[in-house]
Length: 201
Length: 218
Length: 148
Image 1 (cartoon, rainbow over the protein chains, first blue to last red):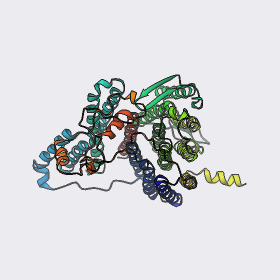
Image 2: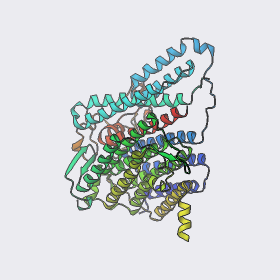
Image 3: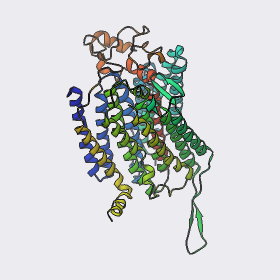
Image 4: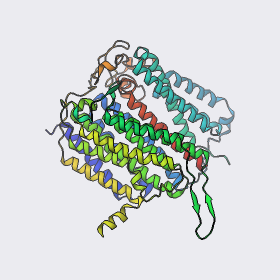
Protein backbone atom coordinates (compact mmCIF):
# COMPACT_ATOMS: atom_id res chain seq x y z
CA UNK A 1 0.00 0.00 0.00
CA UNK A 2 2.76 2.45 0.88
CA UNK A 3 4.01 3.08 -2.60
CA UNK A 4 6.18 5.91 -3.80
CA UNK A 5 3.07 7.98 -4.32
CA UNK A 6 1.95 7.82 -0.72
CA UNK A 7 5.42 8.59 0.56
CA UNK A 8 5.64 11.66 -1.64
CA UNK A 9 2.16 12.68 -0.64
CA UNK A 10 3.12 12.41 3.02
CA UNK A 11 5.95 14.88 2.53
CA UNK A 12 3.82 17.36 0.62
CA UNK A 13 0.97 17.15 3.09
CA UNK A 14 3.33 17.75 6.00
CA UNK A 15 4.69 20.77 4.13
CA UNK A 16 1.14 22.03 3.63
CA UNK A 17 0.38 21.61 7.33
CA UNK A 18 3.50 23.57 8.27
CA UNK A 19 2.59 26.32 5.82
CA UNK A 20 -0.98 26.62 7.04
CA UNK A 21 0.05 26.63 10.70
CA UNK A 22 2.44 29.45 9.94
CA UNK A 23 -0.35 31.28 8.14
CA UNK A 24 -2.66 30.78 11.11
CA UNK A 25 -0.29 32.32 13.64
CA UNK A 26 1.03 35.15 11.48
CA UNK A 27 -0.63 38.50 12.10
CA UNK A 28 1.17 40.85 9.74
CA UNK A 29 -0.73 41.30 6.49
CA UNK A 30 2.28 41.46 4.22
CA UNK A 31 3.82 38.37 5.75
CA UNK A 32 0.57 36.54 5.26
CA UNK A 33 0.77 37.28 1.58
CA UNK A 34 4.31 35.95 1.39
CA UNK A 35 3.41 32.83 3.36
CA UNK A 36 0.52 32.20 1.00
CA UNK A 37 2.96 32.06 -1.86
CA UNK A 38 4.80 29.38 0.08
CA UNK A 39 1.65 27.37 0.75
CA UNK A 40 0.77 27.46 -2.95
CA UNK A 41 3.85 25.38 -3.62
CA UNK A 42 2.34 22.53 -1.62
CA UNK A 43 -0.62 22.51 -4.00
CA UNK A 44 1.72 22.35 -6.97
CA UNK A 45 3.52 19.48 -5.24
CA UNK A 46 0.34 17.47 -4.87
CA UNK A 47 -0.43 17.97 -8.56
CA UNK A 48 3.12 17.13 -9.61
CA UNK A 49 2.94 13.82 -7.76
CA UNK A 50 0.53 12.62 -10.43
CA UNK A 51 3.62 12.04 -12.51
CA UNK A 52 1.85 11.95 -15.86
CA UNK A 53 1.78 14.53 -18.64
CA UNK A 54 -1.58 15.51 -17.25
CA UNK A 55 0.19 16.76 -14.12
CA UNK A 56 2.13 19.31 -16.14
CA UNK A 57 -0.98 20.46 -17.88
CA UNK A 58 -2.69 20.92 -14.52
CA UNK A 59 0.25 22.69 -12.92
CA UNK A 60 0.19 25.49 -15.49
CA UNK A 61 -3.34 26.67 -14.65
CA UNK A 62 -2.66 26.14 -10.96
CA UNK A 63 0.46 28.26 -11.11
CA UNK A 64 -1.18 30.95 -13.21
CA UNK A 65 -4.16 31.26 -10.90
CA UNK A 66 -1.82 31.61 -7.93
CA UNK A 67 0.28 34.28 -9.63
CA UNK A 68 -2.76 36.19 -10.89
CA UNK A 69 -4.43 36.30 -7.50
CA UNK A 70 -1.16 37.24 -5.87
CA UNK A 71 -0.86 40.19 -8.23
CA UNK A 72 -4.39 41.39 -7.56
CA UNK A 73 -3.94 40.98 -3.83
CA UNK A 74 -0.68 42.87 -3.71
CA UNK A 75 -2.31 45.74 -5.60
CA UNK A 76 -5.16 45.71 -3.08
CA UNK A 77 -2.53 45.74 -0.34
CA UNK A 78 -0.89 48.80 -1.84
CA UNK A 79 -4.25 50.57 -2.07
CA UNK A 80 -5.35 49.57 1.39
CA UNK A 81 -2.13 50.60 3.08
CA UNK A 82 -2.29 53.79 1.04
CA UNK A 83 1.27 53.37 -0.06
CA UNK A 84 2.28 56.30 -2.18
CA UNK A 85 4.68 55.93 -5.04
CA UNK A 86 8.25 56.05 -4.18
CA UNK A 87 9.97 57.79 -7.03
CA UNK A 88 11.80 55.34 -9.20
CA UNK A 89 14.42 56.48 -11.61
CA UNK A 90 14.46 55.15 -15.11
CA UNK A 91 17.64 54.70 -17.04
CA UNK A 92 18.48 58.36 -17.20
CA UNK A 93 21.53 57.89 -19.29
CA UNK A 94 21.79 60.49 -21.97
CA UNK A 95 23.46 58.24 -24.49
CA UNK A 96 20.69 55.68 -24.24
CA UNK A 97 17.93 58.25 -24.46
CA UNK A 98 19.29 59.95 -27.50
CA UNK A 99 20.88 57.13 -29.41
CA UNK A 100 19.17 54.78 -31.82
CA UNK A 101 20.59 51.70 -30.16
CA UNK A 102 17.67 50.98 -27.78
CA UNK A 103 15.19 51.25 -30.63
CA UNK A 104 17.20 48.91 -32.81
CA UNK A 105 17.74 46.41 -30.01
CA UNK A 106 14.09 46.51 -28.99
CA UNK A 107 12.94 46.13 -32.57
CA UNK A 108 15.22 43.13 -32.95
CA UNK A 109 13.87 41.53 -29.78
CA UNK A 110 10.26 42.18 -30.74
CA UNK A 111 10.69 40.79 -34.23
CA UNK A 112 12.52 37.76 -32.94
CA UNK A 113 9.76 37.27 -30.37
CA UNK A 114 7.16 37.42 -33.11
CA UNK A 115 8.99 34.72 -35.02
CA UNK A 116 9.27 32.51 -31.95
CA UNK A 117 5.60 32.94 -30.97
CA UNK A 118 4.11 31.30 -27.95
CA UNK A 119 5.34 31.78 -24.38
CA UNK A 120 8.94 32.25 -25.38
CA UNK A 121 8.13 34.79 -28.03
CA UNK A 122 5.97 36.75 -25.61
CA UNK A 123 8.77 36.86 -23.11
CA UNK A 124 11.38 37.96 -25.62
CA UNK A 125 9.14 40.59 -27.21
CA UNK A 126 8.14 41.93 -23.80
CA UNK A 127 11.78 42.23 -22.86
CA UNK A 128 12.29 44.37 -25.93
CA UNK A 129 9.31 46.59 -25.10
CA UNK A 130 10.26 46.99 -21.46
CA UNK A 131 13.80 47.90 -22.42
CA UNK A 132 12.52 50.47 -24.88
CA UNK A 133 10.12 52.01 -22.36
CA UNK A 134 12.73 52.02 -19.63
CA UNK A 135 15.32 53.73 -21.77
CA UNK A 136 12.97 56.33 -23.24
CA UNK A 137 11.25 57.43 -20.04
CA UNK A 138 7.96 56.05 -21.20
CA UNK A 139 4.64 57.59 -20.22
CA UNK A 140 2.12 54.87 -19.52
CA UNK A 141 -0.71 54.18 -21.85
CA UNK A 142 -2.22 51.39 -19.82
CA UNK A 143 -5.57 51.43 -21.58
CA UNK A 144 -3.93 50.52 -24.86
CA UNK A 145 -2.04 47.66 -23.28
CA UNK A 146 -5.17 46.40 -21.55
CA UNK A 147 -7.07 46.51 -24.79
CA UNK A 148 -4.38 44.50 -26.55
CA UNK A 149 -4.56 42.00 -23.70
CA UNK A 150 -8.32 41.71 -24.11
CA UNK A 151 -8.07 41.22 -27.86
CA UNK A 152 -5.44 38.51 -27.49
CA UNK A 153 -7.70 36.80 -24.99
CA UNK A 154 -10.50 36.87 -27.54
CA UNK A 155 -8.19 35.39 -30.18
CA UNK A 156 -7.35 32.59 -27.81
CA UNK A 157 -11.00 31.83 -27.13
CA UNK A 158 -11.69 31.84 -30.86
CA UNK A 159 -8.88 29.32 -31.35
CA UNK A 160 -10.39 27.15 -28.66
CA UNK A 161 -13.75 27.06 -30.36
CA UNK A 162 -12.19 26.26 -33.70
CA UNK A 163 -10.40 23.34 -32.05
CA UNK A 164 -13.62 22.10 -30.58
CA UNK A 165 -16.12 22.59 -33.34
CA UNK A 166 -14.11 22.77 -36.56
CA UNK A 167 -11.29 20.33 -35.90
CA UNK A 168 -10.36 20.19 -39.57
CA UNK A 169 -8.97 23.73 -39.24
CA UNK A 170 -6.82 22.76 -36.27
CA UNK A 171 -3.70 24.32 -37.75
CA UNK A 172 -5.25 27.77 -37.90
CA UNK A 173 -6.45 27.31 -34.35
CA UNK A 174 -2.96 26.39 -33.25
CA UNK A 175 -1.53 29.49 -34.88
CA UNK A 176 -4.24 31.68 -33.35
CA UNK A 177 -3.53 30.26 -29.91
CA UNK A 178 0.18 30.84 -30.42
CA UNK A 179 -0.30 34.45 -31.49
CA UNK A 180 -2.86 35.02 -28.72
CA UNK A 181 -0.51 33.83 -26.06
CA UNK A 182 2.32 35.84 -27.60
CA UNK A 183 0.40 39.10 -27.27
CA UNK A 184 -0.93 38.12 -23.88
CA UNK A 185 2.44 37.34 -22.33
CA UNK A 186 3.95 40.42 -23.96
CA UNK A 187 1.26 42.73 -22.66
CA UNK A 188 1.24 41.30 -19.17
CA UNK A 189 4.99 41.44 -18.83
CA UNK A 190 5.30 44.95 -20.12
CA UNK A 191 2.35 45.99 -17.94
CA UNK A 192 4.00 44.65 -14.81
CA UNK A 193 7.20 46.20 -16.02
CA UNK A 194 5.78 49.68 -16.44
CA UNK A 195 3.41 49.72 -13.48
CA UNK A 196 6.41 50.00 -11.20
CA UNK A 197 8.27 52.22 -13.59
CA UNK A 198 9.32 55.80 -13.51
CA UNK A 199 7.16 58.54 -12.11
CA UNK A 200 7.18 61.93 -13.68
CA UNK A 201 6.68 64.90 -11.45
CA UNK B 1 -25.51 7.54 -13.61
CA UNK B 2 -27.84 7.69 -10.66
CA UNK B 3 -25.45 9.66 -8.53
CA UNK B 4 -25.09 12.49 -11.04
CA UNK B 5 -28.12 14.26 -9.67
CA UNK B 6 -30.30 13.32 -12.61
CA UNK B 7 -29.72 11.86 -16.03
CA UNK B 8 -27.79 14.22 -18.30
CA UNK B 9 -30.23 15.50 -20.89
CA UNK B 10 -27.60 17.03 -23.08
CA UNK B 11 -23.85 16.62 -23.12
CA UNK B 12 -21.66 19.23 -24.75
CA UNK B 13 -18.24 17.89 -25.59
CA UNK B 14 -15.14 20.05 -25.25
CA UNK B 15 -12.45 17.49 -25.88
CA UNK B 16 -11.88 15.63 -22.66
CA UNK B 17 -14.07 17.95 -20.69
CA UNK B 18 -17.73 17.30 -20.96
CA UNK B 19 -20.30 19.87 -20.04
CA UNK B 20 -23.51 18.19 -19.08
CA UNK B 21 -27.00 19.47 -18.46
CA UNK B 22 -29.00 17.38 -16.04
CA UNK B 23 -32.16 18.67 -14.34
CA UNK B 24 -30.08 19.70 -11.33
CA UNK B 25 -27.39 21.53 -13.24
CA UNK B 26 -29.91 23.14 -15.60
CA UNK B 27 -31.76 24.60 -12.65
CA UNK B 28 -28.61 26.06 -11.16
CA UNK B 29 -27.44 27.26 -14.56
CA UNK B 30 -30.67 29.12 -15.21
CA UNK B 31 -30.48 30.70 -11.79
CA UNK B 32 -26.97 31.96 -12.49
CA UNK B 33 -28.02 33.16 -15.94
CA UNK B 34 -30.98 35.09 -14.58
CA UNK B 35 -28.92 36.90 -12.01
CA UNK B 36 -26.20 37.69 -14.51
CA UNK B 37 -28.79 39.26 -16.79
CA UNK B 38 -30.15 41.22 -13.84
CA UNK B 39 -26.65 42.45 -13.06
CA UNK B 40 -26.27 43.57 -16.66
CA UNK B 41 -29.46 45.58 -16.84
CA UNK B 42 -29.76 46.95 -13.32
CA UNK B 43 -28.39 50.26 -12.20
CA UNK B 44 -26.48 50.55 -8.94
CA UNK B 45 -28.34 52.00 -6.03
CA UNK B 46 -27.17 55.19 -4.46
CA UNK B 47 -26.47 55.08 -0.82
CA UNK B 48 -28.05 57.84 1.24
CA UNK B 49 -26.54 59.00 4.50
CA UNK B 50 -28.97 60.74 6.78
CA UNK B 51 -27.68 62.95 9.53
CA UNK B 52 -29.74 62.37 12.61
CA UNK B 53 -31.17 65.32 14.44
CA UNK B 54 -31.53 67.36 11.29
CA UNK B 55 -32.92 67.25 7.81
CA UNK B 56 -29.55 66.92 6.14
CA UNK B 57 -28.82 63.95 3.97
CA UNK B 58 -26.24 63.22 1.34
CA UNK B 59 -26.20 60.84 -1.57
CA UNK B 60 -22.93 59.12 -2.22
CA UNK B 61 -21.79 59.50 -5.76
CA UNK B 62 -20.50 56.45 -7.56
CA UNK B 63 -18.19 57.23 -10.39
CA UNK B 64 -19.08 55.80 -13.78
CA UNK B 65 -15.69 54.17 -13.90
CA UNK B 66 -16.26 52.28 -10.71
CA UNK B 67 -19.76 51.28 -11.71
CA UNK B 68 -18.57 49.90 -15.02
CA UNK B 69 -15.77 47.99 -13.40
CA UNK B 70 -18.02 46.42 -10.82
CA UNK B 71 -20.53 45.52 -13.47
CA UNK B 72 -17.79 43.85 -15.46
CA UNK B 73 -16.75 41.91 -12.38
CA UNK B 74 -20.35 40.93 -11.65
CA UNK B 75 -20.83 39.65 -15.18
CA UNK B 76 -17.56 37.72 -15.03
CA UNK B 77 -18.70 36.30 -11.72
CA UNK B 78 -21.99 35.26 -13.27
CA UNK B 79 -20.22 33.58 -16.17
CA UNK B 80 -17.90 31.76 -13.77
CA UNK B 81 -20.85 30.52 -11.74
CA UNK B 82 -22.61 29.37 -14.90
CA UNK B 83 -19.52 27.45 -15.90
CA UNK B 84 -19.12 25.92 -12.48
CA UNK B 85 -22.73 24.77 -12.56
CA UNK B 86 -22.55 22.76 -15.75
CA UNK B 87 -18.97 21.59 -16.06
CA UNK B 88 -18.45 17.85 -15.89
CA UNK B 89 -14.79 17.87 -15.00
CA UNK B 90 -13.44 18.05 -11.47
CA UNK B 91 -10.40 20.19 -12.23
CA UNK B 92 -12.43 22.48 -14.43
CA UNK B 93 -14.89 22.88 -11.58
CA UNK B 94 -12.09 23.92 -9.22
CA UNK B 95 -10.88 26.47 -11.76
CA UNK B 96 -14.33 27.98 -12.17
CA UNK B 97 -14.65 28.09 -8.40
CA UNK B 98 -11.34 29.91 -8.11
CA UNK B 99 -12.62 32.38 -10.69
CA UNK B 100 -15.76 32.98 -8.65
CA UNK B 101 -13.49 33.73 -5.71
CA UNK B 102 -11.32 36.27 -7.52
CA UNK B 103 -14.27 38.05 -9.13
CA UNK B 104 -15.91 38.35 -5.72
CA UNK B 105 -12.74 39.98 -4.46
CA UNK B 106 -12.86 42.30 -7.45
CA UNK B 107 -16.46 43.32 -6.85
CA UNK B 108 -15.67 44.26 -3.29
CA UNK B 109 -12.24 45.76 -3.84
CA UNK B 110 -13.45 48.36 -6.32
CA UNK B 111 -14.93 50.40 -3.49
CA UNK B 112 -12.78 53.25 -2.29
CA UNK B 113 -13.43 53.10 1.45
CA UNK B 114 -10.32 51.90 3.32
CA UNK B 115 -12.44 49.71 5.56
CA UNK B 116 -13.86 47.87 2.59
CA UNK B 117 -10.41 47.53 1.07
CA UNK B 118 -9.18 45.93 4.24
CA UNK B 119 -12.04 43.45 4.27
CA UNK B 120 -11.47 42.69 0.59
CA UNK B 121 -7.81 42.01 1.26
CA UNK B 122 -8.57 39.59 4.08
CA UNK B 123 -11.12 37.81 1.97
CA UNK B 124 -8.70 37.70 -0.93
CA UNK B 125 -6.14 35.98 1.26
CA UNK B 126 -8.67 33.30 2.09
CA UNK B 127 -9.68 32.90 -1.54
CA UNK B 128 -6.06 32.46 -2.54
CA UNK B 129 -5.29 29.94 0.20
CA UNK B 130 -8.44 28.03 -0.70
CA UNK B 131 -6.93 27.19 -4.08
CA UNK B 132 -4.48 24.89 -2.28
CA UNK B 133 -7.04 22.36 -1.04
CA UNK B 134 -9.04 22.83 -4.25
CA UNK B 135 -6.26 21.90 -6.67
CA UNK B 136 -4.93 19.32 -4.23
CA UNK B 137 -8.32 17.65 -4.18
CA UNK B 138 -8.51 17.57 -7.98
CA UNK B 139 -5.04 16.02 -8.18
CA UNK B 140 -6.02 13.39 -5.60
CA UNK B 141 -9.11 12.59 -7.64
CA UNK B 142 -6.95 11.99 -10.69
CA UNK B 143 -4.33 9.98 -8.82
CA UNK B 144 -6.76 7.69 -7.06
CA UNK B 145 -9.17 7.07 -9.93
CA UNK B 146 -7.22 7.90 -13.08
CA UNK B 147 -9.97 10.16 -14.34
CA UNK B 148 -11.28 13.65 -13.79
CA UNK B 149 -14.53 13.32 -15.67
CA UNK B 150 -17.57 13.26 -13.42
CA UNK B 151 -19.45 11.13 -15.90
CA UNK B 152 -16.73 8.47 -15.79
CA UNK B 153 -16.60 8.65 -12.01
CA UNK B 154 -20.35 8.22 -11.74
CA UNK B 155 -20.27 4.99 -13.74
CA UNK B 156 -18.89 3.22 -10.69
CA UNK B 157 -16.28 1.21 -12.60
CA UNK B 158 -13.34 3.24 -11.32
CA UNK B 159 -11.89 2.95 -7.80
CA UNK B 160 -13.63 4.95 -5.12
CA UNK B 161 -12.56 8.54 -4.53
CA UNK B 162 -10.77 8.87 -1.17
CA UNK B 163 -12.74 10.68 1.47
CA UNK B 164 -9.81 13.04 1.97
CA UNK B 165 -10.10 14.35 -1.57
CA UNK B 166 -13.77 15.10 -1.09
CA UNK B 167 -13.13 16.85 2.22
CA UNK B 168 -10.40 18.99 0.65
CA UNK B 169 -12.69 19.89 -2.23
CA UNK B 170 -15.42 21.00 0.15
CA UNK B 171 -13.15 23.13 2.30
CA UNK B 172 -11.70 24.71 -0.80
CA UNK B 173 -15.13 25.68 -2.08
CA UNK B 174 -16.06 26.99 1.35
CA UNK B 175 -12.96 29.18 1.30
CA UNK B 176 -13.73 30.57 -2.14
CA UNK B 177 -17.31 31.29 -1.23
CA UNK B 178 -16.70 32.74 2.19
CA UNK B 179 -17.26 36.39 1.31
CA UNK B 180 -20.97 36.65 2.05
CA UNK B 181 -20.56 35.13 5.47
CA UNK B 182 -18.01 37.69 6.38
CA UNK B 183 -20.17 40.34 4.98
CA UNK B 184 -22.55 39.33 7.73
CA UNK B 185 -21.27 42.28 9.64
CA UNK B 186 -22.04 44.27 6.53
CA UNK B 187 -18.65 45.88 6.35
CA UNK B 188 -18.48 45.05 2.72
CA UNK B 189 -22.14 45.35 1.95
CA UNK B 190 -22.41 48.76 3.46
CA UNK B 191 -20.56 49.88 0.41
CA UNK B 192 -22.73 51.36 -2.32
CA UNK B 193 -23.67 49.43 -5.43
CA UNK B 194 -26.31 46.91 -4.46
CA UNK B 195 -26.89 44.65 -7.45
CA UNK B 196 -23.28 43.72 -7.76
CA UNK B 197 -22.67 42.61 -4.21
CA UNK B 198 -25.68 40.36 -4.54
CA UNK B 199 -23.70 38.44 -7.17
CA UNK B 200 -21.20 37.57 -4.40
CA UNK B 201 -23.83 35.90 -2.27
CA UNK B 202 -25.54 34.19 -5.13
CA UNK B 203 -22.41 32.77 -6.70
CA UNK B 204 -21.24 31.42 -3.35
CA UNK B 205 -24.59 29.80 -2.77
CA UNK B 206 -24.51 28.24 -6.22
CA UNK B 207 -21.03 26.78 -5.86
CA UNK B 208 -22.00 25.32 -2.48
CA UNK B 209 -25.01 23.67 -4.09
CA UNK B 210 -22.91 22.30 -6.92
CA UNK B 211 -20.12 20.91 -4.73
CA UNK B 212 -22.77 18.94 -2.85
CA UNK B 213 -23.45 17.14 -6.11
CA UNK B 214 -19.77 16.73 -6.96
CA UNK B 215 -18.82 15.06 -3.69
CA UNK B 216 -21.62 12.54 -4.06
CA UNK B 217 -20.10 11.26 -7.28
CA UNK B 218 -17.59 8.48 -7.15
CA UNK C 1 -22.26 32.53 26.75
CA UNK C 2 -19.68 30.51 24.91
CA UNK C 3 -21.60 30.94 21.70
CA UNK C 4 -21.57 34.65 22.14
CA UNK C 5 -17.82 34.63 22.57
CA UNK C 6 -17.36 32.47 19.52
CA UNK C 7 -19.55 34.65 17.38
CA UNK C 8 -17.82 37.71 18.74
CA UNK C 9 -14.54 36.21 17.57
CA UNK C 10 -15.96 35.23 14.21
CA UNK C 11 -17.53 38.55 13.38
CA UNK C 12 -14.19 40.32 12.97
CA UNK C 13 -12.92 39.86 9.47
CA UNK C 14 -9.31 40.05 10.66
CA UNK C 15 -9.83 36.61 12.14
CA UNK C 16 -11.01 34.99 8.95
CA UNK C 17 -7.53 34.14 7.64
CA UNK C 18 -6.20 32.43 10.80
CA UNK C 19 -9.47 30.58 11.13
CA UNK C 20 -9.43 29.27 7.59
CA UNK C 21 -5.73 28.47 7.72
CA UNK C 22 -6.21 26.52 10.94
CA UNK C 23 -9.09 24.60 9.40
CA UNK C 24 -6.92 23.75 6.40
CA UNK C 25 -4.03 22.71 8.65
CA UNK C 26 -6.32 20.39 10.60
CA UNK C 27 -7.71 18.91 7.42
CA UNK C 28 -4.29 18.34 5.90
CA UNK C 29 -3.22 16.69 9.16
CA UNK C 30 -6.26 14.46 8.93
CA UNK C 31 -5.31 13.57 5.39
CA UNK C 32 -1.85 12.57 6.60
CA UNK C 33 -3.60 10.09 8.89
CA UNK C 34 -5.71 8.86 6.00
CA UNK C 35 -2.63 7.79 4.03
CA UNK C 36 -1.74 5.68 2.16
CA UNK C 37 -3.74 6.55 -0.93
CA UNK C 38 -3.67 3.90 -3.61
CA UNK C 39 -2.28 5.23 -6.86
CA UNK C 40 -4.35 4.13 -9.82
CA UNK C 41 -1.93 2.81 -12.42
CA UNK C 42 -4.14 3.39 -15.46
CA UNK C 43 -3.58 7.14 -15.79
CA UNK C 44 -4.49 9.48 -18.60
CA UNK C 45 -1.66 10.96 -20.66
CA UNK C 46 1.00 8.66 -19.22
CA UNK C 47 4.57 9.78 -19.43
CA UNK C 48 7.28 7.86 -21.23
CA UNK C 49 10.93 8.60 -20.60
CA UNK C 50 13.49 7.97 -23.32
CA UNK C 51 16.89 9.13 -22.19
CA UNK C 52 18.39 8.82 -25.66
CA UNK C 53 16.10 11.37 -27.27
CA UNK C 54 17.31 14.98 -27.47
CA UNK C 55 13.79 16.10 -26.56
CA UNK C 56 13.65 13.94 -23.44
CA UNK C 57 11.50 14.17 -21.25
CA UNK C 58 9.11 15.78 -23.71
CA UNK C 59 9.64 13.52 -26.65
CA UNK C 60 6.37 12.24 -27.94
CA UNK C 61 7.83 10.35 -30.81
CA UNK C 62 7.56 10.85 -34.52
CA UNK C 63 7.92 13.87 -36.76
CA UNK C 64 5.21 16.55 -36.72
CA UNK C 65 2.03 16.04 -38.75
CA UNK C 66 2.07 12.26 -38.33
CA UNK C 67 -0.46 11.46 -35.69
CA UNK C 68 0.72 9.95 -32.42
CA UNK C 69 -1.82 8.26 -30.21
CA UNK C 70 -2.58 10.04 -26.96
CA UNK C 71 -4.31 8.31 -24.13
CA UNK C 72 -7.08 10.84 -23.68
CA UNK C 73 -10.32 10.37 -21.82
CA UNK C 74 -12.50 10.70 -24.88
CA UNK C 75 -10.26 10.29 -27.95
CA UNK C 76 -13.25 10.50 -30.28
CA UNK C 77 -13.78 14.12 -29.21
CA UNK C 78 -10.33 15.25 -30.27
CA UNK C 79 -9.71 13.86 -33.72
CA UNK C 80 -6.66 16.03 -34.35
CA UNK C 81 -4.93 15.41 -31.02
CA UNK C 82 -1.42 14.12 -31.57
CA UNK C 83 -0.68 15.84 -34.86
CA UNK C 84 1.66 18.39 -33.38
CA UNK C 85 4.48 16.58 -31.66
CA UNK C 86 6.84 19.49 -31.22
CA UNK C 87 7.68 22.75 -32.82
CA UNK C 88 11.22 23.85 -32.93
CA UNK C 89 12.64 27.13 -34.11
CA UNK C 90 15.78 26.87 -36.21
CA UNK C 91 17.82 27.63 -33.13
CA UNK C 92 16.21 24.96 -30.98
CA UNK C 93 16.43 22.50 -33.86
CA UNK C 94 20.15 23.19 -33.90
CA UNK C 95 20.29 22.56 -30.16
CA UNK C 96 18.33 19.34 -30.53
CA UNK C 97 20.69 18.13 -33.21
CA UNK C 98 23.84 18.87 -31.29
CA UNK C 99 22.98 18.17 -27.64
CA UNK C 100 20.85 15.76 -25.70
CA UNK C 101 19.45 18.34 -23.35
CA UNK C 102 17.00 20.49 -25.27
CA UNK C 103 14.12 18.97 -23.34
CA UNK C 104 15.42 20.40 -20.09
CA UNK C 105 14.85 23.86 -21.53
CA UNK C 106 11.27 23.04 -22.38
CA UNK C 107 10.00 26.11 -20.62
CA UNK C 108 11.78 28.09 -23.27
CA UNK C 109 10.71 25.80 -26.10
CA UNK C 110 7.17 24.65 -25.47
CA UNK C 111 5.43 22.20 -27.66
CA UNK C 112 4.32 18.65 -27.86
CA UNK C 113 1.91 16.99 -25.57
CA UNK C 114 1.51 19.89 -23.16
CA UNK C 115 0.22 22.12 -25.91
CA UNK C 116 -1.98 19.33 -27.12
CA UNK C 117 -3.53 19.01 -23.69
CA UNK C 118 -3.63 22.73 -22.96
CA UNK C 119 -5.08 23.91 -26.26
CA UNK C 120 -7.04 20.92 -27.37
CA UNK C 121 -8.19 18.07 -25.17
CA UNK C 122 -8.36 20.09 -21.97
CA UNK C 123 -8.74 23.45 -23.65
CA UNK C 124 -11.57 24.57 -21.44
CA UNK C 125 -9.19 24.60 -18.46
CA UNK C 126 -6.92 26.98 -20.29
CA UNK C 127 -9.80 29.22 -21.27
CA UNK C 128 -10.84 29.54 -17.64
CA UNK C 129 -7.25 30.03 -16.58
CA UNK C 130 -6.62 32.86 -19.01
CA UNK C 131 -9.91 34.41 -17.97
CA UNK C 132 -8.81 34.33 -14.34
CA UNK C 133 -5.59 36.00 -15.40
CA UNK C 134 -7.54 38.66 -17.28
CA UNK C 135 -9.80 39.32 -14.30
CA UNK C 136 -6.88 39.56 -11.89
CA UNK C 137 -5.04 41.98 -14.16
CA UNK C 138 -8.20 44.01 -14.58
CA UNK C 139 -8.50 44.33 -10.81
CA UNK C 140 -4.86 45.27 -10.41
CA UNK C 141 -4.81 47.84 -13.16
CA UNK C 142 -8.15 49.33 -12.09
CA UNK C 143 -6.89 49.83 -8.56
CA UNK C 144 -3.60 51.13 -9.87
CA UNK C 145 -5.23 53.74 -12.02
CA UNK C 146 -7.62 54.68 -9.23
CA UNK C 147 -4.81 55.34 -6.80
CA UNK C 148 -2.99 57.66 -9.12
